[in-house]
Length: 221
Length: 266
Ligand SMILES: Nc1ncnc2c1ncn2[C@@H]1O[C@H](COP(=O)(O)OP(=O)(O)OP(=O)(O)O)[C@@H](O)[C@H]1O
Ligand SMILES: [Mg+2]
Image 1 (cartoon, chains in turn brown, blue):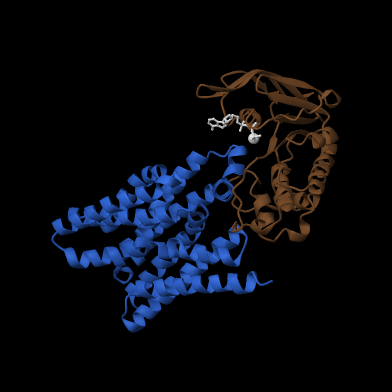
Image 2 (cartoon, rainbow over the protein chains, first blue to last red):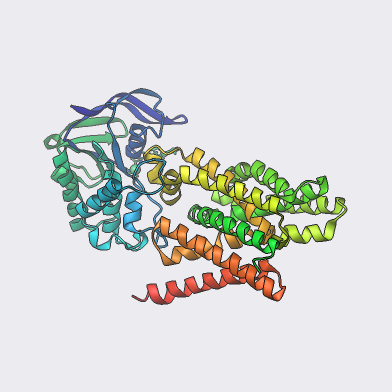
């Protein structure tokens, strides 16, 4: 079953056309890697999928009741950031009118913190957490509402190699509950290791297919 | 002391004001709106002077001016690069207007002091009722949007992704801020508003890492300042605003010391 299907998508900023006639599908359980050079439009695609940007034309089909969790490429969390990891994660507890969290909501936050291995540091300020811990906290927040699709925009970019694999191993553990993943990256090794499908974006076109058809990476000068 | 009606009124009014400033202050600090609070207090000064000139209650003039301008000023100064210029221009304009209205009205000196420096001890029972109603309105609206306000204040990027309408929340919050500024000005005066609206919350941030706990601490800090300030003002006959200012600054300094020597050391 498709979690997202995109057909003939065109997205532009003013008259700067960024995405032209893009079509692809993400199916349940896929780990789709999106790969492409800087500025080719990966983040723009994500923003269109999330409805933060109105496409010029084309169709984005997301079944009703599909929730999307998203870890954005940039986030303004500096050393001074005041909230604890637990409070940061629990921000995504829904828009209800009751100010405080009920028992079930608190239990869900605890469970997510446990699953992302943050229990020991949950009450420390997020601003003082390491890069990898921050990414796990972002992940926990994005997964709190049990989305069917998780989109990661270069979440591994600031991590060392070992941490990259650890973070994505963690993500694949969540796939046992039918989570589909769209992972944006520049790292071809990582893409091959974790991906089941790929979408390669280029300035003049697109390539899509099962991961074993991902072409060799030519170093561009 | 509490057998005196005017002191009782002052204590009740300042309790409500402390609760409002504590909770709103936490979000002012998180949204980095201290500068806007400052501008709004100057706009409030102009509004109160206008009210004196027109023969209205000062609070009405403040509410009118701050509500009308808060959203506009908030939107104008969203771009960080323009902030300082916008603040200076708007502040200058409204302080100028305030001076004009005061000089046009007949009862200049005493009304100017009470607008600028507060006059909680002179507060009437009707004004107390008005302050309580306004405070309750602010608190109810804040609680109703609390979760969304919290998300968009402490993680604006994450909040947008889950479909929280940031523009709407921000407009509502600016209006709440305008009301809070007008309410707080009744005790500390428009010159010292940030003493209640930003200092207690800024101090609270150093002691805890949870939003709810920050709110509780900020309320306690402003309550401590206003009540102790009233008491000391009563005992010494010195201005209440002076004591509130000193108490809040002391709390802030303690918070800074605590942060630097106890938290970072371990
Ligand atoms: N808000 C915007 N207004 C106008 N142009 C934009 C905007 N955001 C991005 N662009 C342009 O759109 C193009 C695609 O940007 P996008 O951020 O989607 O690239 P990307 O593939 O995510 O790059 P990176 O790998 O560096 O993150 C770029 O040329 C960029 O300059
Ligand atoms: Mg990008």
